[in-house]
Amino acid sequence: MLIEGAQRQYASLMHTRVRDLLGVEFPIVAFSHCRDVVAAVSKAGGFGVLGVTGLSPEQLKIELDWIEAEVDGRPYGVDILVPAKFVGSDDGGHDTSELESLVPESHRRFVDALLVEHGVPPLPEGDWQPRPAVFERERQRALIEVAFGHRIRLVANALGPPPPWMIERGHEEGVLVAALAGKAEHARRHVAAGVDLVIAQGYEAGGHTGEIATMVLIPEVVDAVAPVPVLAAGGIANGRQIAAALALGAEGVWTGSVWLTTEEAETHPVVKQKFLDATSSDTIRSRSRSGKPARQLKSAWTQAWEDPENPDPLPMPLQPQLIGQAWRRIEHAAHKSPGAQRLINYFVGQVVGSMNDIRSVRSIVEEMVVQYSDAMERIDRWADG
Image (cartoon, rainbow, N blue to C red):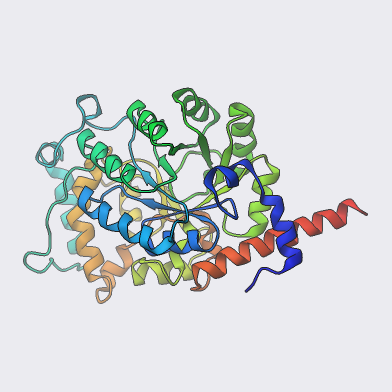
């Protein structure tokens, strides 16, 4: 699908401050853990953002080197999880061995029993290596330093206000600093800390979300932080939703779920098919993956953790430490084990009900622009009577 002249004329109405700040054709920001998606969005006129939490500094350098070679000077950014509060945060974070010692044995037994109940086989010998603790302060700083060694245009913090050192380094390097907010008070806190952009993420979104819906949240945040520009997030996957977001006062959109079923996405094949089959009622906010409330696809895994007879999820980062090897087993076996197929899921928003086919990233960006243009033209016709 190509963007025709008349549609491009209406698309020019997307000319917001965010578009200029990011240096893009369309103020459509795409978050993904897949470098192919990030590069494809930037090449299509949007702005790709790579989720880097969980990578080592060495892995991150490889990913960013590849993206820069692929996008040929087009802008892109990175997103990292630096929560303000988590187990061990007052001491700079725990290392892997310390986290292991804090995981209750009762929770280990529960996870082991859950996998046995669903017939999930053990991993092949040597297939599992414990990952370093994600939230050690020095590890986070090392990742950011690698990112600042590349031509990133933006760095976003996904949980809480960015720490002062991230904001200071970003501004030293001429890099925009953004943060996600689920309440107006969170947005004010981000602006007080010095961020350049606020991403107002509604309840409908995939991943870590608050409890306020996008339609209510966006104007609240826009009013709370003006004149700082706001990106709208949560339940946005087409051009009509972009038009609505801009009408609410946002100056661009932050999207995530819609890219999970693209041709470029590295989403687990079983999960991708589950997404294609899902309705908008098939997600749940659960602490069962990260330890904080995060919207994801319902599965036997979330069902087990919601059962009041079973243990409650542990706080971040103990829950990821507890389930790391279990999830490796589930993902490894899901292509052949019915039990692993019942358990497996991933973070996704309520808009999953609209993700019904596998398409290229470029075709989705182009369709977003066309639908936005059609929506604006329709509004103009109504206004003219």
